[in-house]
Image (cartoon, helix red, strand yellow):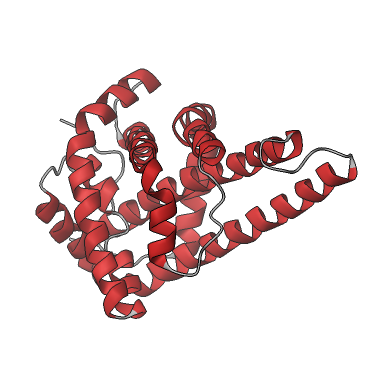
Length: 250
């Protein structure tokens, strides 16, 4: 079905903006609860990683907090599923209904996410380009699972490859442009607000007022980026399938 469709990054971004404009209040509520708050908890609990010389050192530093990291990841997955439910369902569910549907679908999406990440990770280990290619081919897999009620990870992966056939390059351009933009925005916000807090004399050591406020500001930017990335996956799916607003979780 996807052979007759080509993905356009500019058209994809237009759809993201339209979704933001139409669903802003609901998206802000979900992003605040499922992206911002868990991210802040994680940033306040995790200690600074002093030794980043090797992957083993980083893993060792984070190991005591592994359960918390997994919990935060699951909460953020629920937020993503709730967003996809809200924007893809034809019956306009409430936020509560979308969250309930997300919770019920979470075990299936968790398995789909784990397997797709393993595939991308294997590609990155072989060589970075295969990993990037696989990430682009699997970019809309979450939306596919929600919109088409796909619960089998292998079926979801197969369907994602069907949908994204011959479109890896424009998808990569779409993800790269927006990703780099948000990375630069995050750096700029961190620099500007960090400098401002230093100028006004706020404490910037861990636990200080300035560092706490800075974590909150950058957390807002991160939550916004996570929300936009979720909508980008919707835009990719809709363009490559010609989908409108199909029923979700039938």
